[in-house]
Image (cartoon, rainbow, N blue to C red; front, side, top):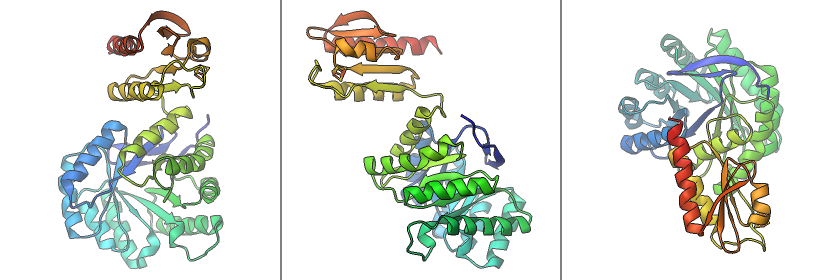
Length: 349
Ligand code: SF4
């Protein structure tokens, strides 16, 4: 798949853009002054695959926490500021690797102060334009969102600042697609893509995937966030899964499990599939694994997998690339599957 080549922007020790890999990010969901919990969330997200993390800075207590947080994390930290741009400047002094603002939320003179400090510290700024800050009640305000973003790009460039990442956020799937496509046509800055206020669990995941897949398939998006109501961990796993399924993230496992039907020989198949997925995630085993309900169709349908198990009338079967290598009870075959996976993992290390 061709990825759009964009300008490359440094954020801490990583780059966003170019046509390098798409970076995964999320946002902490507790107050930043609660730095112990923030550090825990950031490090857990980083372990799950986050490349950078964002926190909101609302007051002096949040500002003071930035230094402590920075000392205890390894991924770049983006500070999100609304309205009070003094906090944006102070966040840079305290070690923020990038700032996310909506530039229209302050006066031009305060914005200029921020630009000058960001320039002096080589700190990137994300221009974040949200549909929520527009008065129009129309569902589709694609042109307004893009024009607003372009207006601010011009302003930053006139002030000799081009260390920019862009984002246009809407809770509407179609507006998200059309505005990011249009923006990508008109600029060469890296774009952070995501659908805002998408909802929780399956609701938010489906809506986000519907909005982001068409963009990713056209090579648009240098960073991605799946915004879900709740803690940030599912956001990271969902982003990784989406990118992997679109061939944009190699280092990840694939779990295939059949939908089950009247031929299924196990009442446990969903539980087994979840257990296998957890095992692959936890041990970072990047294999394609099948969990199938019957041997009649399951082994054939799972033949593209590196390894798998399928239920039979009297036995469960363990197979590799569609060939049966062992049979036994359900419990025995699940155990053997894990042993085989662990073995290949050890061999690769
Ligand atoms: S693999 Fe077997 S049990 Fe699973 S859906 Fe196909 S036919 Fe049904």
